[in-house]
Length: 95
Image 1 (cartoon, one colour):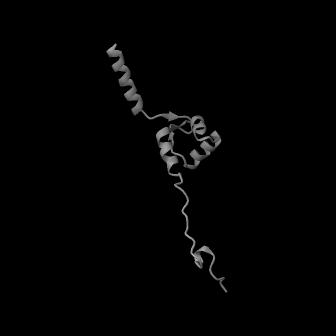
Image 2: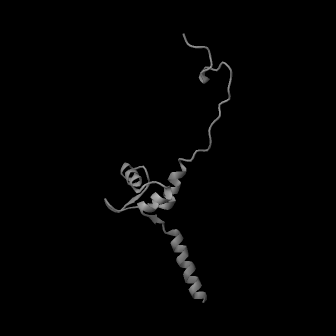
Image 3: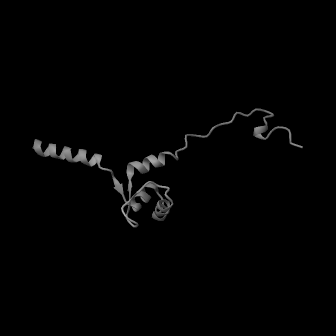
């Protein structure tokens, strides 16, 4: 039994190191957008992908998640209101 368990653990290690390739439909479902949008992003070079040929495209889940993280908003910057500050549009009107 230990031999089978060891073999399964070795297979799991290899599977974890292997990139998880996803289809355009799978990425579309993951991002909750249409597959057509995914294909448009591919043609525009917006989303990271692996092209095997003109029609065969796959996506590495890890790279897509990293790409998506760059669009995360951390929160809005709040500007402190200063009376008479021209940049806030509250100063005296220009003549």
